[in-house]
Image (cartoon, rainbow over all chains, first blue to last red; front, side, top):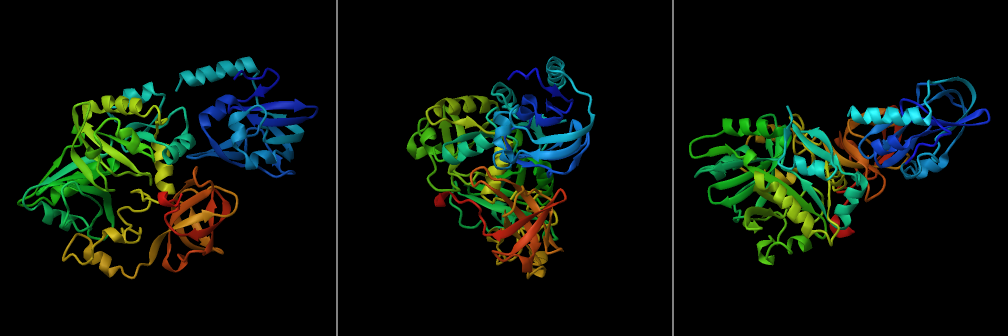
Length: 128
Length: 363
């Protein structure tokens, strides 16, 4: 899967898509592939505060749990309830499966564009 | 330093994700992923490398007496080729390991032990050696594959004559042969499905793997890793050493009383287990009834009061839903009892359910 060019990416493999002042957050194809079949998602509630670089929830595969790190600081406006019942959507369509919509953004993690992120992933793979 | 099974290169070739387990490098899954591998075993067939398991011979005129003393089960009256599961206890009634004993012939027993415990088991068993018994570690000589699923027999019948296949569960044929190579074909497994565990000379394991994969093409046979091995055994409520029992947990607490024959005159751990009756704690099954996945080593509460801990837990691919096994205070173990399990700070509602969670005849 080619990483969409309009998104920004973090070192912890989350992507961000801005729509106006709000940010949608998901995980990349690299991440979903590394995690394997996801069977559960733990998300915050609308109204919760999230902080850039800090965990805002987690995803579970059959064997393991992985934290999701927020790329931005702000307030959770909406969560994607569809993922709660169908976590496999994250594996199937990682760039459509957003976890949270964040508003009132006051800060951001350092992020990469698609090209830099692709290079970053290749390096990670090489180091395994 | 981790060891490789004879099939390491094969796993890499088939796209396995290699991890360390019990001192060995083995695939946790292949590209298919744990869920698909689990479902393959429940619906058609899967192939596992289980060469890391240990094999120990117990031989000599006093072999039967030795087994009856060192292990908790009763080994009298076994026909050649019969297998019997047994815990092995220490003097405190705790469990050293759980294992399977095959009778190859009079005075000749083939014992299969957990990979992670092999050195410990061998040292323990060797220490109890006495006149008339010889204990030998032959683990390095053998490779082992597990062919598990409803189509397992169909696949095997393409490779061997039907009468070479043991008919009954927990029986084995020590005179098996595939591609002209000798092997042991055992109707046993750790998945809750019908299937076989096949033992061969270690250097022949890769050939057996390729032969079975080829034979199973029509039945969609796929390789499966340790991840699916664990979810399958847990879904079938089979205990795993280090989880449901250990040096401190007795087989009776773990619900393995069927393999502990208290009417034997003497065996290691008998006195301690007798003194521990009635049991203060028991293994049960828990089913999550609110959102969340139950995991191992989590605390179990009854309205704020700590009543036990989970020993294994996961999301079950076939049953769909999260289940766990737990050791609870004896008065909390009634089926239907409503409790809470705290997983990473979050409380999940559970209910005590009967074991096993999954039984193949009830599909």
